[in-house]
Length: 392
Image (tube, rainbow, N blue to C red; front, side, top):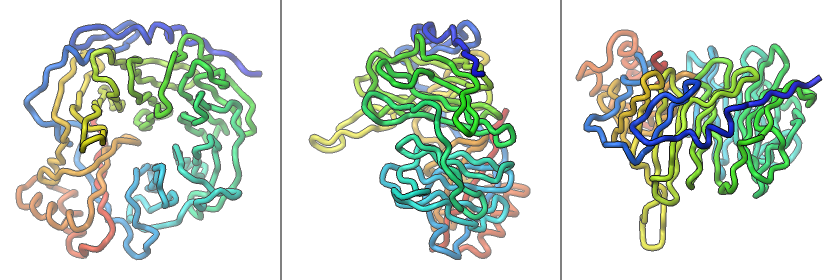
């Protein structure tokens, strides 16, 4: 028998953003208004967010191993999640300790057991499975070490918006045999719940209705962001443009709790915000639409804001976050599964790593590992991954 949970704070959350530099709202909700923000002078660096890093040289023995993608991290595996609308690479599995390529997960395509444009991947190491949600909101399962297709899990509700594009996040408890889903709420949505838990046959165990959370008008490019930085929970942010307050939630068990919200009324039209939940903090990146060339408008990151969830204080930084472990190296990074992750091309690592060793920014086991990698690395080899556990 399913149970219905009511998120009583839901309607209030949308009105909770207040003026000022930040503060704790009722129930621990931190609110923030960018119109009151002043730019800080310092540069945010990796060591502000994470502890001593480790480095893993990814397998270069097969072309299948070469893929630029988000990396999901478990105790023994690295899973490259090639999330992209035009991605032509499948999800790929590596050994967490050696970087050895293990397998491709399934195949790209529209046939049985195949997927295109994956919207999210979840790794259940205990159950030995990889779960992939595709653009059609189907969740397919694969063996973690062989990549073999195992079947499709029916969703109790279809998290589809009024434009026909699904937008949801999920996690799996392999031991309990349950699937938890959180969806973007829409005014005219056939999905009656913002979150629910079901068994793997599609039977609902509990649900949280959308009451009070529907967005009166939502652009079709609204994205659900999930970083998996909280054990056993979904940390979910809604990234969109417009004047709807962007709120970051934590869904743990059957409790949905807002932890951070931003009043976007002061932002330029078309601006978007992406917030990531860290232990005790929220890192937000503000993107504004700017003219790149005549009649060509692109989104440009203009600021990073780090908010302390205990004090409510927020500090604005330039958009560049430097890898001070690697001598100030600049490059793309991601934050998920409790780690700050950077994938560094071999050619660039061969330049940055020796400089970091000379400057003394790499010490102890990290320096030892980097020296070992440098002794064998070639410019045409695969990327070197840097993993640094987030500070508590």
